[in-house]
Amino acid sequence: MNGGPRQNVAGRSPRRAPRRGMALYIAVMATALLVTVLGLAGLVAVGIQRRESVELSDRIAARYYSKSAVELALQRIAGDANWRTTYPSGVESAGLTLGDPGGGTVSWIVTDSDGNLDDSDTRLTLRGVGRVGDAVQVSGVEVLVAGTGPVELRSMTSTSSAATGQLLSSQWWCQYVKPTLPETAVSWRVTGVEFYCVESNDKNMSITLYEPVASNWPSGTVIDSLTFKSKVVSNYWSWNSFAFAGTTSMPPDQGVCIALTTTESSAPIQFQYLTGGVAEADSALITGTPAWSAYATNKALR
Image (cartoon, rainbow, N blue to C red; front, side, top):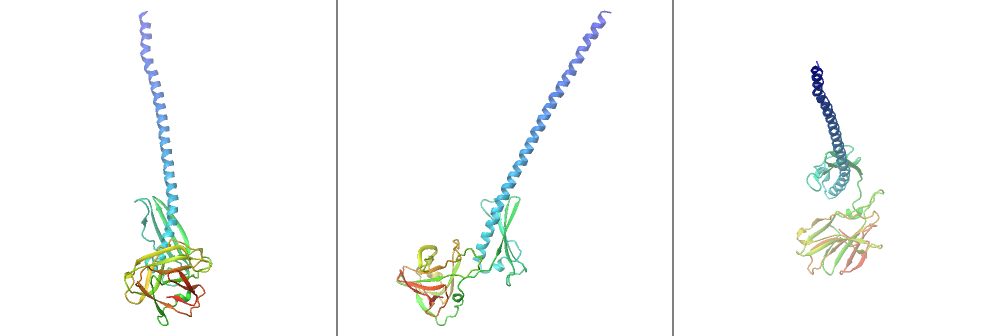
């Protein structure tokens, strides 16, 4: 009889130990699970923050790209006489990559409100598109058709009543011009000039754009310059075009002096000019040997 109760008491101890161990195990697992969940939540939060940071960075970069697209499009249009067919109304241009591959692209869309760029512009708009990653930003401007030079000088297309001049180291020639711009214009730039000329000898020559002084004579400040062999000029009388980078903008009330110069004693080119009768208010023919010494408002280079 005395042995029975001792056996029951001894028999309960092994059954209580596993219950306590199981409770401890469950508590440890629950804590570990909670820590894991908190850790995963933190990783998810970091991932979301990183994606938001990248998206914000891409949007900011794309915004700058869109503005660059507008500037690039204006430069391309200014240097393309056939831009109305190069960029059909409402059609986005091919994307151009800026920087490293995958860094982002720029493109642009020129749109006329009547859908036809070939006729007189109804309302011309230019939209620059910047893309970086999944971000797309668009900047837009309204484009106004501006004057491209004094009206009278641009109308001098007839070859009659024009004299022939030649460029020499002892005879430099310069034309002062000032374009007629819209009242809303804030700046302008030279992207090209044309001269009616012919090659004489394959010699070095330069076409230089100078800022004018207050009296419209050439100053010592160079806006842009081209130096080349005159063999690029046609060997028969014709209009010859010369393109400038057009990177320097000038205020709308400023003109420009376009100078033909050379250090050669044999003439690189011959050209035509009007010896009188020019009434254009914002022009003058300036000559020198080689320092500028004569200024005539009634004469002009063609």
